[in-house]
Amino acid sequence: MFKTIKLAAIALLAAPVLLLSACHDGWEEEEDYDPDFDYVNYVPSGGVSFGTFNQFEHDFSTQDIDSFADKDGFTLSLVQQSTVMISVTSGGSLDPWVDLYTGGFQFLIGDNNGGPGAYAVIVTELQAGSYVIVVGGVGDSQGMYDLDIVVGSLGGLDFGVLARHTLYTDSGGYINDPTDMDSYFFTLTSDTAVDLAMIWVSGNFDGNIQLVDQYGQEVLFLDPAGLADPVVTNLNLTAGNYMLVCAAGTGYGSYIVEIDVK
Ligand SMILES: [Ca+2]
Ligand SMILES: [Ca+2]
Ligand SMILES: [Ca+2]
Image (cartoon, rainbow, N blue to C red; front, side, top):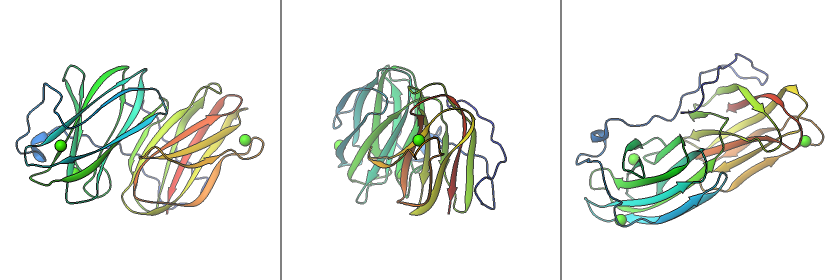
């Protein structure tokens, strides 16, 4: 799991409310969304083998659920311990769910509607090794879907689903050196404007932030001149799952991450 980081009641950006972060909820009661649920001990046909991922790599596959009993299996392996964001989005009538297993078919975590609408998302920290992802449809819902995998680094946290008009903050950020990158995750369930900031606390680092969407696309990269804090205000984001990467071109030190949802 993500390391637990104490939240500080610091409101450097104006916002009326400060809430504790809430992680993306995993589903333990599989039967809640999959009436014929059974754990798989094989890789179902209909998916792909993604191969290996390093940190900050992305890949995707477009497949379909075409019958009540259809479920598609995908394999991947991680080169090193990493955070992963697994998103399933569908354009049609498919209400997808997604389950994650080890390569030995030990069930780890599943999700049904953790993303926007009825989309499924898993955000979790995984050891290096092999994993199996299984996607299916709730009830007899069927249709095309995209499975996207974004792999991030350790050292951040999962803010989960963000509420409107709320300031989220994490005071546990620390950059060791320019190779150290911290990955923070969050979900917006509607199109929303946000302020993002990486705020200097101690040390002498030159901070920068990169925002990546669930499709692995860079939404924003900010490295202001000199040692100024990277801050963006009123950034319009579409509903979806995001990874915010905090890093530094030089130096080391501690910082606060703020996400102010309008
Ligand atoms: Ca299929
Ligand atoms: Ca769903
Ligand atoms: Ca700079």
